[in-house]
Length: 353
Image (cartoon, rainbow, N blue to C red; front, top):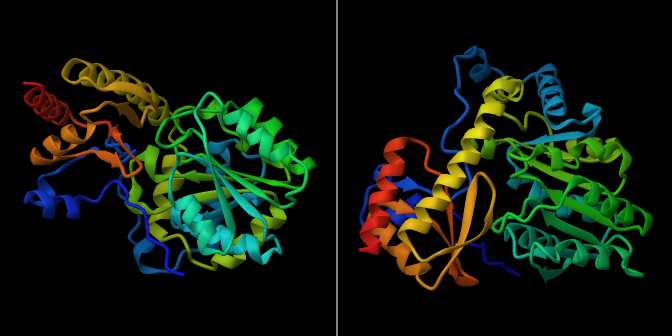
């Protein structure tokens, strides 16, 4: 059975073809990737020339463990991007002898449901709101039967930004373990609110899997690095499944340093928080859209003119994110440079006028 891949943000090449504007002329606000990346300094060219060393992967895992608050690097699996994990884990999970139902807490990132379907799992998408999301998850994890069922939650959620706190998540993960079920939490957008991450509790929760993305907050999505966090025996098995040299040498070197740059991280969290407020004010001043939610990396708005606005911005070489299942919703990433903010404001003002 062939499954249709969902649409994604970041497709500048397709936008360039549709609107007749060269790819290099676009302002891409269609993703949740930080437009102000961590500044890459020079690193030893040897990382391009030889295979990555086991000691370098160990150093990366230690840097990630310190950053995510994980007590032992044995809990960590590194892969070339979170997307690679989303596509690998369902098949690996099936090989553990677990063939139950995958419950996707929606609306959310569409690749999760697709990944479990591809691996032959029955999927059940549970449509929720930020207000009832906790209850929906508890109902699944607390219900009788369904052993080895797995609940997939994106937290903060993409695209509405709904966030469940660490205490509540820990309770839900314990419920999963007690009832023989599993909880997979995709924390791709958690870097701006790290106190809510469940990663520091991973050693207490046997039926928990957590995904973390490096590229979004650090603004280096092309580097391709993601981590999965789980109990050590499972982490060792999944690492074997992924195989050797999965992370490129330059990625190992860059990420190790970036994970340790606490000053940049703190300053960037403050900047992104301020920029999210600036974007909300800009949209409010120049459109009839209403804020639905978001994070400090993206904002979700709602309004009858969402599609029209997106098309107008496209004619100006500005790409934003629409959704196939709801034409009234539109998501914006944050501009990085002042000239990009001014370009967006001019385009919004032209639409309003």
